[in-house]
Amino acid sequence: MATRLFAAPSPHIHGGEKTRRIMFDVILALIPALAVSTYVMGWRVLLVTGVAVAGCVLFEYLFGLMLGRRTTIGDLSAIVTGMLLAFNLPVGIPWWIVLIGAVVAIGVGKMTFGGLGCNPFNPALTGRIFLLIAYPVQMTNWTTNVPDAISGSTLLAVVKGKTYDAAGNIVLGKMNLEGIDFMDMFGGYMNGSMGEIASLALILGGLYLLWRKVISWHIPVAVLGTMAVFALCVALTIGGGALCYELPLFHILAGGALLGAIFMATDYSTSPMTHKGMLIYGVGIGLLTMIIRLWGAYPEGMSFAIFIMNAATPLINKYFRPKRFGVKK
Image 1 (cartoon, rainbow, N blue to C red):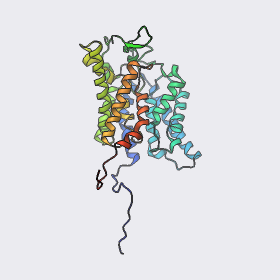
Image 2 (image 1 turned 45 degrees about the horizontal axis):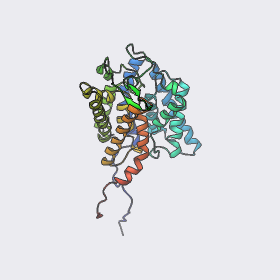
Image 3 (image 1 turned 90 degrees about the vertical axis):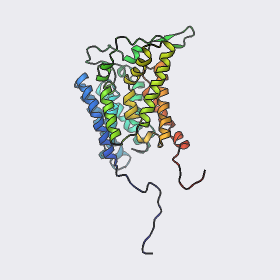
Image 4 (image 1 turned 30 degrees about the vertical axis):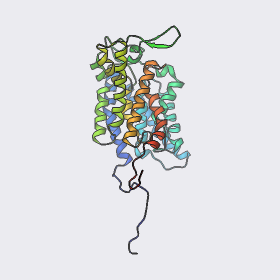
């Protein structure tokens, strides 16, 4: 036969998107938030981000040498991991703790499982959760240059209004949103991690990723929509009135909701493959985030929610597989 035919597994057509191009788009999408954080919090934002990025790139190179693999630092994924790790840290954190987070993010969260595409958990979140457990004091020291920021606490911690009943169970008190300027929250004038405060910049970065088709709308909309509906139900239960529109908006803008929904929950390696699976995955993240925020020990729950749903991704992929053509049900 003059022509030989080869049967190979899918995909049979390559879309032309390379890892380096995708990671470069993510870096571009994060730059506006980095710029706003630097303007609001000062030069230490660049220092912490630089240490995190340099640490992730260095440790990925070293772990690759130790494991006998070809270097993968050229795909820019280590830079993205470093930026996301830094965005989840307070600006005043010591540099050596940042390096420990980079070791855990790359060594435990990524290279242990085989590198990019094989990791079941988001590497930056792995590093962040480890640091939160190992160094709780340094990870909750919200020292900023914001003149009107609430010293020592994030808005989530202040507004949570956690009280206890006679049995010692946590109950929700009246959530006081008085004195909170939502325009300040859009612009970044609030306490929190470096990448949490720039709400408008994160939204612009997300729109850029949607335009470039790096991410789809399913996960961010499912996460933020679930959080908004949950907050609305809570507002109707405990107060109503202005809380009905203020509380959903507050929970979307405060903490790591936008950063997590747009940049971390959408990680290809750790999120479901199908659109239906993405919606279920996003709803799970939104529910867990709000449950932890309102009734958990931590004011913020986005990192833990994404981490838990990362573990559920294989199960979601199993029951929501793409439809196979040519096979009858």
